[in-house]
Picture 1 (cartoon, rainbow over the protein chains, first blue to last red):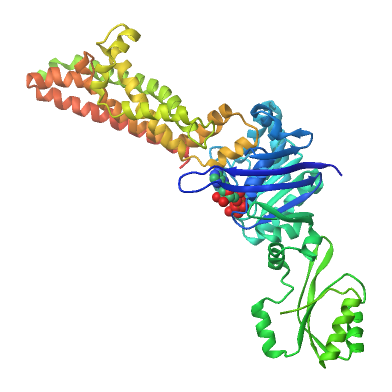
Picture 2: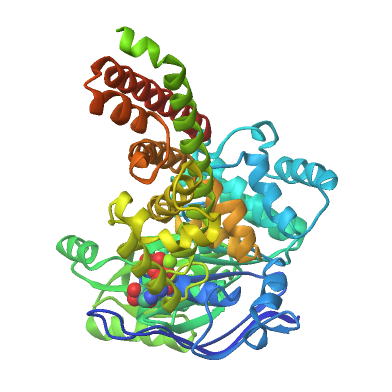
Length: 343
Length: 219
Ligand SMILES: Nc1ncnc2c1ncn2[C@@H]1O[C@H](COP(=O)(O)OP(=O)(O)OP(=O)(O)O)[C@@H](O)[C@H]1O
Ligand SMILES: [Mg+2]
């Protein structure tokens, strides 16, 4: 697989202004997005996500580092050449940013006009795109007559007008309710699968990543803390920030509050065991506990689906003599079962 | 009343002259002011073609010229008027001075309106690879058009006001008519009919402007 987007040690520092000192919004970021990926970038507000995504279509120039999209090194191009590159990169926004002075069809036609498509061909293409996003009958409406989800569909049709191979989505679902969010995410997935468009999804909602991304980067204070396959990051986050995000969707481990409540009822040792997809896993656990001579009970847990696989963990209360409990924990470790005792 | 009827042909000619002066000045200052206003807007730091030095210079010029009372401005640009239209008196001179003076007022109104255009929309157009010119003509101005038309309507009243001072530099129109044939000869009917005519012109202009703005805003 070839990388469609490549950032090499990219940093962006905004100069000091007024009372503010200089802000390093993106700090030495290197990443690769492969053709065909839905690449998620997650981080809290102010992490530098929007700045990062705007470096990918050169709306923003990095202070240092290099940006490649396809064969072109954007950081080596002049403004005029960049405009041609941008015609091959679509972008959608949290606030949709539709032209209020144009109809739905007019919005979608604008990038076609910019790209120099003859007027006669534009109508056909516009109809085709609106049909793809399911809004053909709204062609002559104005944006303010549409719901948020419909607006974002228009935004997607407009971004895809010139057949880009890359689509950048900056918080594209953050202004939408959960149902509409799911619809728009499903549409993005269709764009990826049916049209073969590579998508970079910026979000602060882990759920969006869980439902469509195959790769993810976790961003904090301008840096990429962790990146990789979504399944790997979800099942074994290596940084605190990443586990916090993972917890927001998986909810498979008890929070400190839950733990406090559990301890009032359950006086034994509390141990969370990560689930695997191995068949008969529960039975194997049961045998380990029985052989060690401890009593056990499932008191908490969560299992989610992620890219056609299950992730999650179950939390057990283990009671018995100290030596027996210790034996059980040792056996889990010996059998390479991931278990942590909840503090 | 007979005093007024004697002046009736002149009254109608004055109405015509006022409309003529106002409309040409409005169109000329509208175009020039739009250009200057767009220049002021897009050269701002962080805007489409940010050029700090250009922005600051334009801003200083507009700030200096705009508050100068029209008739003093007209006097001050006398040499320029002479150079451009080969006379410093009469309707042509009035139109020249008026167009120039109004250009600075239009520029501010244009700038204020264009600054209300959502920066996100401009960013979207940039992301599509549109050139600054294309964005100015096809995005920025159309997006700001509704309020812009209202701004022009507001300005129309100001230009009618300024045009009434034409008497002082030898121009015609209702202002001259009211002063020379009315005020200076104690012919009050002439004055009041002039007032009525001005009111009708202003109301008609405002009505038309509001109608246009409503169409542009689709409300
Ligand atoms: N044009 C700018 N000038 C100065 N500072 C900026 C500019 N744009 C962003 N910043 C700063 O850079 C940092 C990162 O901003 P950015 O918008 O990239 O974050 P984000 O992760 O997208 O946040 P959010 O989730 O709120 O959109 C912030 O501290 C912000 O204040
Ligand atoms: Mg952002």
